[in-house]
Length: 421
Image (tube, rainbow, N blue to C red):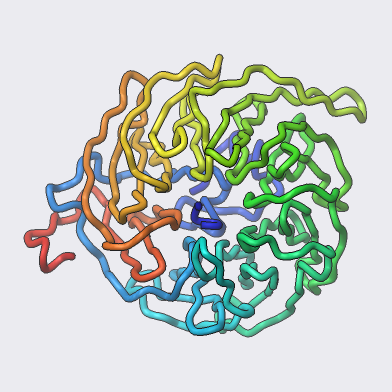
């Protein structure tokens, strides 16, 4: 399964088009899962174009913060993540420069099943608060400085939805004054200040996906991929704007193209089944999604993809692939990383990939051919957690370890692998 079972801001017009309702962010902050736009794109510049033989220099390495598949969010020199130890899940704040723990706060009981223990989501930072969602559905608002609990809700009880057997994996999304989460595919909105539940969205089937912000034809909306396909709601009150049925369900995030089209996927029990590009027509009060194409050249299962220069890069099940967004045709396929994860280093035209086996790799984000530029060992155990690149530093973790690597072009290379690793 993926890191949620199992976010780097764009500038100028793209920021205004896709994240107009989000809090401001700079390239030096990564305040929610998969970055400011939840698109897995880092806009950092001045990074290493090539890695030394032993890999990028190590900034720090520390014991893990507990079991689970949470990634990092970051603001004000701190990292925030979730982990489980003993019978409890925790929200944990760390010093970004050293990896040392600053505080931790309980976030409900430990979730356990045969797909792995612990939380599946990543905290979201907004202003001076941290919002976290545990695998059992406990949504907490915490003081970012101290970890003190401000309000808490059991979202499973609030929505009358049972916790799925894979656990609740939704990372909270903030739109204006509403905190939005998905409880097994059903969206729910809470007042950001008081925690009062504002609305419950349309009842839909199961989902691993998190709510996703988009602006289409000037209208801010929140998307969720779930068992019937994709659903769009008004973030202010949860009313349905439009939906598009593609049976089979989905785990990953939708994609938003530069011209406002939506990429979605579907899956089967055997893996991903393909990718669709939808054009969303808006005439008066009516919304009509229309299929532009369906492609089996990229069949995501639980590994999110990225959009770059008119192409989508992602895992065709567990092999990397690139497709052309004009027609969905595959440009290349290659490289095995198991059930790994990936982000885009946009300025460098590079994909940074973490493999399931605990490696980190650089792959060219170009369309002519698959080209791996580097691959080095990182951890010695299963790694499903999404990586983060922030302030010229790569942050990685799994259920046992966490580490930070220096990606600045002026970083001195390590001289001895045994000392650095």
